[in-house]
Image (cartoon, rainbow, N blue to C red; front, side):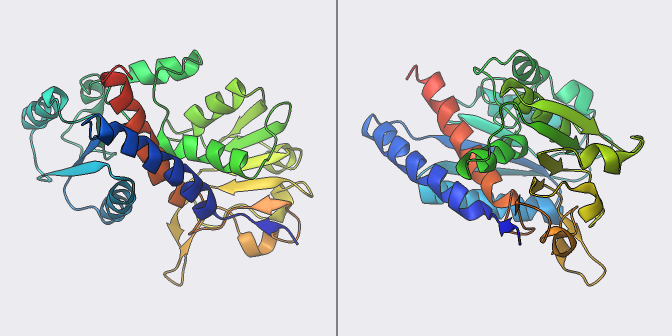
Length: 284
């Protein structure tokens, strides 16, 4: 039977280190601060917000929530974002996406201060990721996958990795992070032919396609590591991932659960990048 690798130990290891970093900053009268921008009251956004608030509070990071009305106009949103950009007490900004249809992300993403853009919304940070420039910020979920692989000592360099999903939030940036670590990466998606054959040759499979339990053991090579990024609700109303864990557990080497896997690491990465942004803005 494969090992179930949970996110909490990896998240806690990051948190312990950050607590010490924040203590050192506070000795210099510097307090890191994150501002979260949320439009409306989307349930999944609010759940993530609660987790981020709890994580930041445990580390000593200040957190502010800017809740905006669901029907906010483009100009009003831009005005609010500019105020947060210019707030000298805010070190990191995270905007929940997707935004409502009346808000044009293709315009807004260029307006967030790239030095405070701790979830890689601004294309400048995505460009830095493409160039393997560590002065930028990676999307938190993609970085959380790398954190889990590192924590559990799953070798990346030289390994065949299949990423199922090509979103700008997870699939594409994660593929770049893996390439930067010298993996051989294949991206699969809804138009990929013979996906089972491709995936079953991989040493590591990362699934971020957003479809409940769509991946079964026929996609997995014996002993492979499987990282399930998906968060869905099954027919019984329970949270589940993109991978049918029960079906795959006998065949995998390691697999992350849902819930309790990648999602629990994401808020620790968010906090890590807020502290990083704070240090840079204070020339530390």
